[in-house]
Image (cartoon, rainbow, N blue to C red):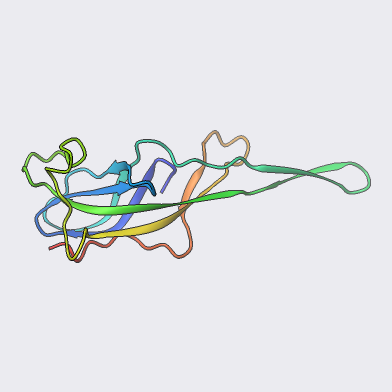
Length: 149
């Protein structure tokens, strides 16, 4: 995962469809390409905007003869929710949000088939040119849509 993509470890879509990723506020932040019926592994979802990386801390400590700069990693965490959606109108395009929840409804099994993950974004080291590197944090799980039949 980078700060612009997330990877869904495994999902199974009995009728085909999509994996949509939502932020903690419930806003759609990314959706997979159309996925054919069956099992899928390592599904990459591109996010509409990068996960925010924190600034790196720089501390200056004195060791008697001068200052030494020590950088300390800072992290920021967020929770993302992956929900499996059917392609209910058969056009291979995700239209759940644009259709006001009419088309491409979620797979359900006593509620939408979903899984969440805690995502940790680390600050970038000076000179790397990136905005931050995302990694999955402790306690998170990969999306598993096995219940979506």
